Image (tube, rainbow, N blue to C red; front, side, top):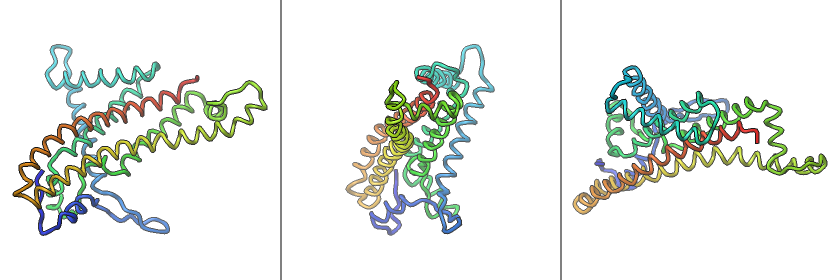
Length: 275
């Protein structure tokens, strides 16, 4: 919540906090960059999530559960209920996948409500000049997750229907006809609709999550910047604004994790349906 001006102007402060920790990666024909901060935070938060659930799974009891076990059980029942509504087949894969998506994204989103300068200041002590601690505010991260969902959608669709059956459905739906000649005429339109669907699904998943979290992250930066550079006037108002927006952002954080999880499960489930 605090911000250190360090001689920076207000604009420089915001630009500094919007800059990723880039590590150049040489590729054939050019140089790309790797967002090290996004990679580190996503891996650390994923490890925390797995360790947390493993800890309570190892110590689960059939008797009266403690608060931690009770929360885990409620979370499992909630996610499993959502998967059951979307898919009536076996949930051995979709259940754990949905649980992982929801809590991993939730943990990454929660970094948004931490004080703006907390983690970057700690990273600066290790020599990192820039560090963005919210992985889901990086469009590369959200697109990576959405493309993974697309790959799983294609894989399980082909697994359920066969490769020929899956692409036969792409050619013959949503416009159907009994006459063979009409089917051939409608095939290009069906293929176009299939391509549009395959493109819009990952794009909408990625941009919805990124847009909501990035907007909240930017607003926290603006509040922190105002508090740092106009301290006497903005500090009391900034505290109230930060707390007020934190409650709103917490709601957005949970909703966005749920939406991504539910749509991912729905896309994979729909791809396996034969009708």
